[in-house]
Image (cartoon, rainbow, N blue to C red; front, side, top):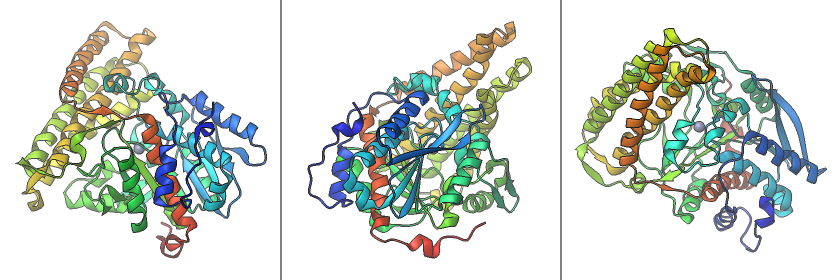
Length: 479
Ligand SMILES: [Zn+2]
């Protein structure tokens, strides 16, 4: 059965109204796990076969490991909307969102007409990275299982963050073939709407917009509320980001990030590589939209009440834990390096992320010294800061473990390296136990997550269909 067989069309609400979008979001059928890359390709190939004249595809890039990457175009409306999955290959909620969006657009002529767009969907722009996460796709609810099979590329191998940068001392042009394909597609389509399909991990729902669109706030809050999902009102992912509304942030630019880090006395060149896809697309006046969704919801994520700890003390405490985590992994990696015989994506990622944890802790301790930090921390902030330590221990400890284990699996591990694999596994098990002990989270049904992301796409498209051309008039000049 395809998803659209089960979509109900019963309401008379105006297409694109908040009620209509809440109803459509709620009609996503129950979903099990996440599709593998081959499953994803099969869904889209079948959709094209079953909808001749409505769906067409073309190759837009080739992955570094030689896999063709396709874009599927649906409909023939007057705007061009570009939806891209796999920008972070560890974030697969968007795979179902892409499938559901495509199937619904094919099945619902009224929706296509009302939104008046030609939709271009790239189901995954990073199949190589996606395949390295497939070990947890069938059972995404268990955080330990998930983290142990997790893969996030090093920053300079993430499609999302490998667009060209040139700002002060930050310069980046090592664009990967996947990113180059997406750059060409963005420049060819000059899309009105660009949605990169991301997701978070733990807590609540939040969004990024490339420019303020106050008209979207109501629906962006209403859809998660309709599923009983909290907004994430704790720590923003980056402290310099502009907050447009609760849990709605500006995407920000590399220049913003650079200037912020510089103001803290941190060397920005160390932390900054490429620019984001959304910043790149903004040269065309494109509205960029990201819906960040957790697999697990947590009651503290949206709790603004004060704790008895100051925000400064919280930053010092969790920043110290982050640095200690990084230092433990730096030590393991340094001892492993001379024993390793081959480069794996896990090793490249570890080399990038492990020292980053040390520096992240230092940034938080620098932030603690600022006068604005002398206030009580909220429950949501305490949760964000504490959970980030667990999240990064599990993610990056897990990837370092995969890096050293790969040698044991390949039969190239010397006796000292095998002992180091065991030592890493013991530390990792302790971190898993600590994270599990702190865990009061609840697994969210995947259909609700897809509903929220799908709802955000429809809401933005409906807003543009209603005539917002602000971006085309005022979008930033190309850099
Ligand atoms: Zn992401």
